[in-house]
Amino acid sequence: MSETSPRAEAPETGQSKALLKAGALQNAILNSANFSIIATDDKGIIQLFNVGAEFMLGYRADEVINRVRPSDMHDPMEVRARAMALSLELDTPIAPGFEALAFKASRGIEDIYELTYICKDGSRFPAIVSITALRDDYGDLIGYLLIGTDNSVRKRVEQQLNEAVAAAEKANRAKTDFISSMSHELRTPLNAILGFAQLVESGTPEPTPTQKRSIDQILKAGWYLLELINEILDLALIESGMLSLSGEPVALTEVLAECRAMVEQQAQQRGIGMVFARLELPRYVRADRTRLKQVLINLLFNAIKYNQPGGHVTVACTLRPPGAVRISVRDTGPGLEPAQLAQLFQPFNRLGQESGGEEGTGIGLVVTQRLVHLMGGEIGVDSTPGVGSVFWVEMALTEAPQAVVLGDALPTDAPRPEAHPGTPRHTLLYVEDNPANLELVEQIVARRTDMRLLGAADASLGIEFARVYQPEVILMDINLPGISGIDAMKILRADPVTAHIPVIALSANAVPRDIQRGLDAGFFNYLTKPIKVNQLMDALDAALRVAETTSGPAAHQEPA
Image (cartoon, rainbow, N blue to C red):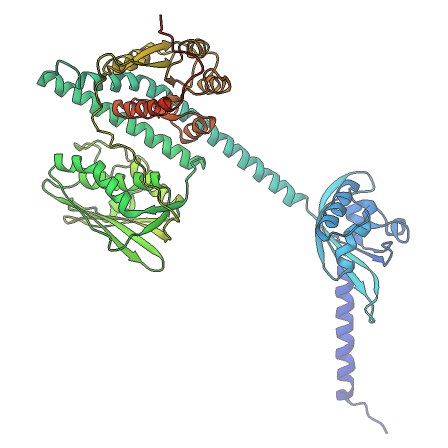
């Protein structure tokens, strides 16, 4: 009598269950409507077309098996473009069609494509298709497997995101253009206010003490308003991503010396002592030189402004491994509470100082923080109420530049020699449509015995005057009626009669990209309004030195 052993049946039963499970999984995959599975023979003719492929493409399996290739259901332009791209990539001639799509797969490289499927009814939808080569046990190619998924939802979300980004960029550009335009409009009247105030302040006879106090208030308010305009413009450019910064080796010793020279007078007026630590070795950081100075000057001005009478400001530099340096600005002011520290870098938040005696907008530190981050640095603050605050900036160290060229520029406050009697006077042509601006420059130039001014109210007249009178230097406004200042400058450059004359832009367009555009266009220099009298004089002297080395083709003619 034989007995059946349960131990003998167990492996067979377990194997059967595994086979049934594997078969169920294969069946579920082949019959899934969520993705298409298409298999071809080695010639690329469809041999398997699953339920998902039927659902997505609208064909029945018997309509395509042994009849068509997968590429017959793809956008032919995309297939052709893919073939050309592969041909260039691999430097191999590739025939268009399914051969192009299967080319990498046949070499054992799985490829994934974004393709457009064309359905039986002519409709289209984007798909992601993966192609894999199929081989037998001997390694011979027997076909290809294509697994595809509908990519419509992702494409739709991607399109919506792109549209949202484009709308945001358009809004940012509109905001920046608006602020740039407002900056120009505000600078134009400020030019007259600050320019004439500077003339009265330094005029003859000297103003009375009462007049001097009034003039000081006008200049103080005007320069503060200009600072506010600049800060708002900087913040708008940063937020819109349109602020361009250079990354170059900047010598810390030089930058700190320049910053000290710019703030020392204010510190002396307030009785604030200043200590700048000396660097034992030359150190260079990678930064935008102009913007790094802006950052440090802002921190120094704040340390002076919010200090206590008789206090002091200490600037120190310490190495921060690996490869960074920390520039610290320590003051002996009232310090900040933890709640104030948490709000420190919020726009227009003055931490309760609105009713205090110090002017401010709450923008400067925000701009400072964002400039530091754009230059790849870090900024922070440590503060103790009743003791003071330490604002610090960390920047990456870098190697010294290969060559340092020292300029031979004269100091800006160097006295200008009077012209000797009988010395011919230079002619300065100023092309400007604003009468107040023209009068201001006329009064500035009238203080120089070596120059005379010739005015033109538009670019066309200015070009004609330049050709006839051959001035040594031309001052050119940018926003002129009719022909713009940039176009007028290009006309002067293209004319052999006027090409040698240095042209200085004098404009209320003060956005960095406008300044760079002007310099790239060929202006000898680019000055922004409001006019700083000494800066204008320096620019004229530099242009006259250039004019002396060049000679025009025509003799000078006295203006009528």
